[in-house]
Image (tube, rainbow, N blue to C red; front, top):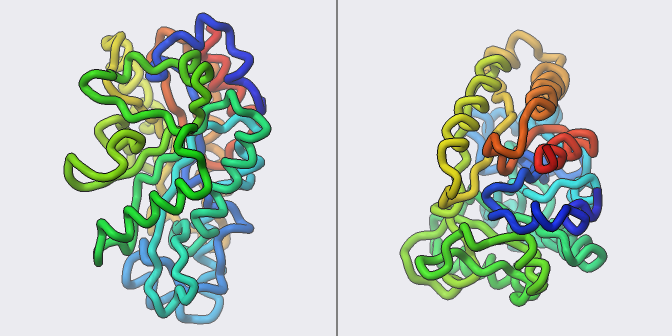
Length: 315
């Protein structure tokens, strides 16, 4: 699976990227060895959780409900994952003397550039694979937002080569023109997505924005409802043979406070995510290339999950 894009039939490679089924992971960085209980509760959490996190043992409890993956970024890429869902935090300076941007999911995770390095190392070994990096949530960017944001992109471009970034779609270059075949031909293997303000900025040509991707959130802990939600998305997408954006199917159950209160000794994986990912895999096994499946994300991904997504392209 480390070279599944490289080995796709040419007929699939020539489809618009919006019409290719791509396996992704939800909160890709939130694996156990990344999220830290040594640091304070992250600034994406509620003020109540931040205060509670100061009590001994609470951050360890939080971690059981914050971990969403078992595989590191490198292992996910090797297992076929090509869409990475990143929440990026600029922690308060008193907790961040090194001034590092970090991943965050209730707890602070690995520094952002460590994850970008993992992508770079993977692509050096597998240059014809294409990785989508979606930094869809930014926390702590309120002060001097533009400076922090632009410094972040510059730092990323200090790791990745600008020549390997897939140019952003435009009126003259609609997303329907983007195919794996063209990206592989031109040596472009990273799609970098991030929210930003305004129409003009130094990275207009290389940075994809929220207009280029849709990611409807089911926002439920009920698996039958989420599967129904995914079916409706697929039905809508089937009616649009030339969509103008990427589409993320979130096969993800969202834990409620009542779930945690009723099952305090459990975890996100045991209570919800293991069953939700299995249901998503069952749903994928019945999808066809005509069903409009694009990016699919899940918690606790595996090579078996990736293969089910990839196989949709061949049916």
